[in-house]
Image (cartoon, rainbow, N blue to C red; front, side):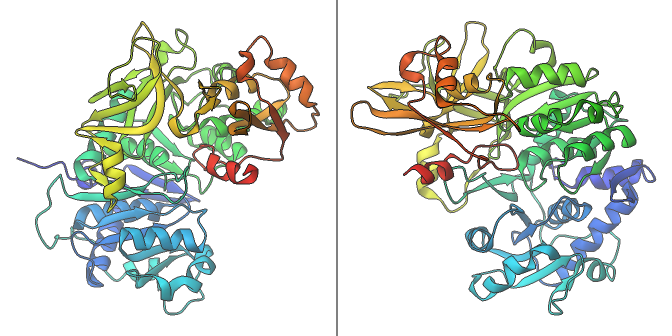
Length: 510
């Protein structure tokens, strides 16, 4: 039986769509044949310096075509790719390299100053390849290095199996140092196939990669395009105007935009928004943070031709639930229904299924689930219950079978023995016309145990008093949910995928 090997579709597309455009980036264009040949050259180059099946190859890159090449080259020779957040600094980079036991780091030359001071401390990483201009003579330059190698298909040192590890993808680190989710060829192959079906990413379209490709969301939503033979246009990093310009000029049909990215687009002046023709866009996928109702309304008003998919997923599995386009008007703030191949359970603290409209801990299982957290027996014991994995979220299911994320379990506030979910409060705060962003945490209180504190970012040019915010919450929230403390701040720490980094917020108020 032919196994599901992750890089096989690229080889296939190089044969069936030889001269069709595969990748465009900063004026460069690669056909499927050229793209596959570059992947092969990199695969041979990695084997030449001793990379074998099972060896870990880390990369720390801005969005670029080389990032995709590393991923598919690892797939062809049985190596394991390890993405590193491009915002990480020295100790965080070292954590991922050491924790994953990576032997090689492919990095953007602009990050060299974060790497060089720590080189002697890395336990296993001894080879470094730079993308871009590099003054460090001892490092391989990516383009010069791969150019000397064969364009023919590489042969792995031993046969590959679809259950072999393809990637160790580190979680967003919302609670501190991230842990690595071990993903197989089969898992990542199936995510690409299922996302193609669920998000209606068909042939003869064009993807736009604008979110960070080291993250599971942007990568997983780009890959279906390459599986079905579409082109992917890559933006080095997100910028709202560049996104709109790319949609118009490249006629892209599919993209991922996290809620903060959408909010950045809609914060542009009207005269800029209306400069661009965005009618080529057909499928818009959002994940990573709650999509507030006001933002969703702007999506439908501005992107008039799109089908909006709003899904609940994780680095550990791809997607678990999706609010499909035809469901958008039926349910507000829902993450929809289970995706193909996935099951969901909501359990109470005793491990029993909760009733309809009762909050419980989200557990998921399915055909794209990760194998484990890499070398984290305690985390595995805590998160896995047989075939089921908890992602640490609290949710509920309504009488129609739709799921809702109530909050992160660890973020829940226990006030006067009553559970208070910050996400509900944040949702109300986002409705205030002066509020740009908001985060709610629990802080100690002598009388109630914990009370809500709201850190609020106001829109540009706006001013507000604490009393105004509290008055706005009256009638929208029960008294015990209204923030006791309000702090106006310049910005909130978020990952590039839009996740609030609440552990950083808590540090400020400890």
